[in-house]
Image (tube, helix red, strand yellow):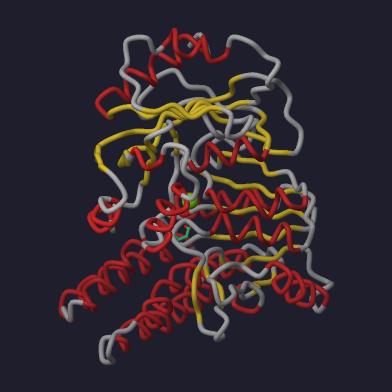
Length: 439
Ligand code: ASP
Ligand code: MG
């Protein structure tokens, strides 16, 4: 069994959706196809929730009405058969009826989850009607029957696996399954989700749950690139990556894959292929257990980073100092990304600024605090075996004209991170591209 996930842009236009149908029927291998909502839908649903939270019902109604007309024209263009059109209209009526009803009741967080789930429910139902019209036999599975998260909002892989296997067992005659990405049930049995961009995570969890042969993530670019294509002109797709390298890149800005989606497939050693709907023959990127070379594979950057330095002579020869600092971040549920220490000071970075003022206030009782906003982490990813000489030297030679605020090397074999003022990010990425990849 293979798991194929198609993102919002791959199903966002009728023509694209037809192409997805073609791609999944190129062979008869058994498949589970995971779909996102049509592009832009989840953002629109979020904005409806925003209006409802502010009690702006008129505004919400307007957005709901506009969204509905997008879906009506979508199915009109997608479907040719009257019968299929009527079925699709019924589906649209049902889901938009729900959205109209919520205008009349008081808004809350649980309701928000229900609203956000409408996108994937609509895309998969519409796609199934299209497949049926084309005479393609497929079974629509509700992700709400097997995808679940526990009390800590973490997916419960064991339980997902048990439930999904049962569902598949009772549908043994089928070889093509369609299901929703992103949505799930929480431990109270209510509709919930795997957070924004979570359809990749769904695909990876499904792959792990059934120990699939392969998980394919289909998007609109040809794999993970060796640098940020928005900044550097001459980037190339990376043909192979290890799970660890892919995880570093996914976290550091490569928007193509949700960072959480690495662990389930990694745990079971299931290869993940990143492929391009627009160019289905392109090789894309293969993420697997094996790494082919001990070299630098890619460079990525993450903006919006804040660096915090805590200096205290009390740190000299004392133990427990780092714990005291970390506890402050833990109290505010703020993850630390990079960290470097000297004998009397610690510098660390965060990308969630929500509680920065309160964090700084508490840190000031420990030592002198300095905060630098507007920083970028430049992350160089590859397989850096300790015996290989000259890698760091090479990188610093390339960046000799760029002021570097922090350096982190040796945390893992796969990442060298540098912190620079965001002003220098472009120059740094371009210089690294030119010298490391000769592009
Ligand atoms: N539709 C959801 C979102 O836009 C999930 C996804 O597309 O991955 O975040
Ligand atoms: Mg995505």
